[in-house]
Length: 302
Image: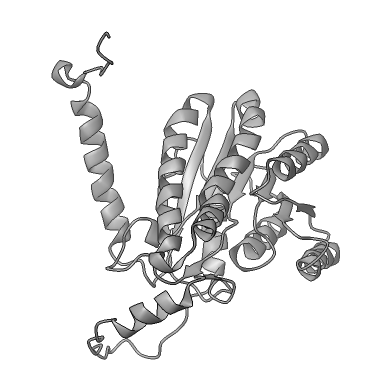
């Protein structure tokens, strides 16, 4: 059952066919939350994943239901969210997890691929958030979590299409954070580092492979890495992400951090960067209250 300090009962999680989403759904359901685990293509390629979640829930008498939801479709999102509201009489938490990786230099992607990836990774979470906000505003409470990436904050001399979509999502999520706080709704951003999931295997490959090869040939040689004395290398476990989501949900409303970094790989310095950003952000917010900064730009009269 729910812990006594839990603030949520009904949770919608997107992208539950595998990876983080599947773990998040199982972790929350095992803790007593009523979870609506959503995914697209439930009747085709993701049918085995949907059935596996149903079987898992049945074996444990967990409150987990699987629903069709494609975050790139207005109709699909509206239908799924309306279904949840009718069954559960509200939504306490939305976890925007659905997304896909991409491999290849920006030049090698067709514009159709670029638009598709932004549609899934950035616009999709905003579409799902917009669908739950009327219910949350009416409740005067709620939590929306955006799963981004440390690549959505810092580019360690590399980036790409995937990183660009996550940067966009970071901006959308932080903007929403400021806008909906007045309604008692929290927005939190979870920034995982690198974890061993199926994301790489499922990544979108750039269409123009001749361009990919040209970049590969021109790549600068890699400097040798220095050995460390930290002992055998251990892969981080994706369960860390699911546990971090649960911790955010169970924090008191209004006290959740805007950004949380998770994992030991591809994360060094990111939390400190976020702290520095927060100081600059707050300083600029104060400066903009000064009369000399309060300028409204208007179009000159014609």
